[in-house]
Image (cartoon, rainbow, N blue to C red; front, side, top):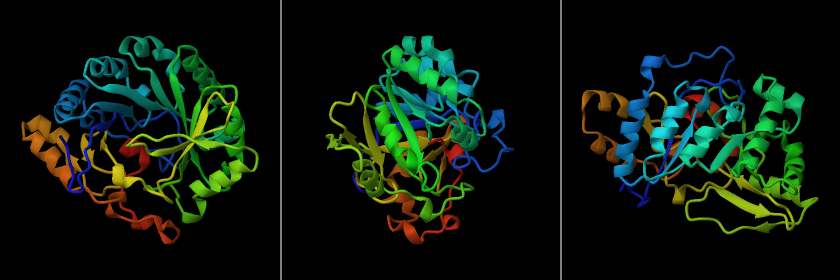
Length: 326
């Protein structure tokens, strides 16, 4: 088992397949002309499978594939197929634009839950945020996923002054469509122009939503990051991931493997462990992994606390979100 010094058991591994993406969301990647990691420096398909097996041997029972955009990788289907044979719950996070090409892969691999990033329900604003004209393709693919019985979560990064005025529209969407909308507080990463006044908090979201809707809290799982709610009579739900205003670090069970094979024990961790080089040189991987997890900070990578209002983005030392892998 992977246990840190605060007695938290880590059984959930997020693997980034690539730092490449077919969108250019400003809060995720710094510039349009981004220097992606060279292919040789990325984990190869067989290396991803080998590393995943080592983590499974150490107690991991859930794996989520992320990016960048995981489905732009040419061998994404083969990787999904290989990992589906492990004794884990396998899922992925995607921007949704290529989902129609992977329906057979998902069915054959037994994937029944997927997270889709969608920060607006307005086509023009979608193009402004992503710098791509793909809104209708993404919406069509959300429909396709629902049609094949997929449990669909919609990840919405909420930014004050940009899309906080769409909270009610997203909740309205859950009335007739069984989507599970997750509102995410805006978080600081390298190059994403974060400032504290752009954070629209959990409490602000609930206050805004309560202007129109009455809602009930849903029971949360032990390691759940989202505070979930349902409007009576709605087919879907909504929730809030309150990383900035009300962190949930005390029950964290997540670890991250970047596309270039670095292990991060927290989304905000400054220190990383190069497990890919260790794999390629035959080093003691289990010891490296256990040491990395044992050194995990109590909260938020040890870099800041929930009093984010006075935080300056350049005080947080980290990669860009696209280079971490969500």
